[in-house]
Amino acid sequence: MDNAIELRIEPRTRTVGLGQVQRLLPYRNRRMIGPFIFADLIGPDLMPPGSGINIDAHPHIGLSTVTYLFDGRLVHRDSTGAVQTIEPGDVNWMTAGSGVTHTERSHPDDLVTSRSLHGLQTWVALSHDAEETAASFQHLPASEVPVEAATGAEIRVVAGAGWGLESPVGGSSPLVLAELQLDGTSTVPVAVDHREVAVLVLDGDMAINEEVLTVGQLAVLRSDVASTLSGRGKVIVLGGEPVGKRHIWWNFVSSHPDRIEQAKEDWVAQRFPIVPDDHEPYVPLPA
Image (cartoon, rainbow, N blue to C red):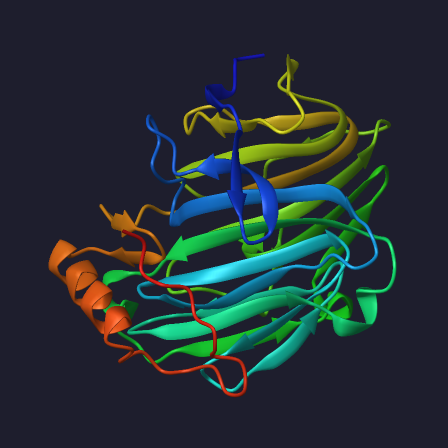
């Protein structure tokens, strides 16, 4: 069986408002996987009583943020007026377009208890014709995520399309974000028709075309080789069609560097829309 892996991306520890995360994208040798331009693995972390996540108001342009939790919960608020608690298996998809501001915080009822937080947050660069669209927010409860429960495997297509399933959460360009759980008794082909695809193992002992996968490592797959997953564990598959070169600075993504400079000026002058009832304090523009 042909080797399937083109590149292995090692996670890098970063400290952000969610605590310590394992950053996978962007990477020096691979800036994007399809339209995915940013990916952080959150946790798993045990949070003691009295501690919480408090990410103050901050801006985005030119992208969609995708939050998907395996454990714990967070409260999302944004300048479209959306207020939404996300729990395991749910999907929060926020499209920034020409500009959005949002916050993420622990649920107030959780602050008195010990709890775990584990999830994945990714950014999807918008296609050229969608970079300046109006901001929007979409929540998909876990019960509405399409699932294929085959013998020995469960496939959940969180966003986009793959394995004959299509999520109600789409995107401005062809993509897939899926969670696969294998019990070791069967194999699953990576049945997504996209030029750029990568696999992230969350736990267990997994292989692709008999090449062993490392937990926490993002394995970028070759586009000219049919790939099959095997083993026991949980993986994320993400990718899609390339959208072209993108510039990224802080929370801003654009095909035009001048647009990012404008976004910087707009945030300093507080010309972005505000988060109702949760805009102060806001995160200052980095030096």
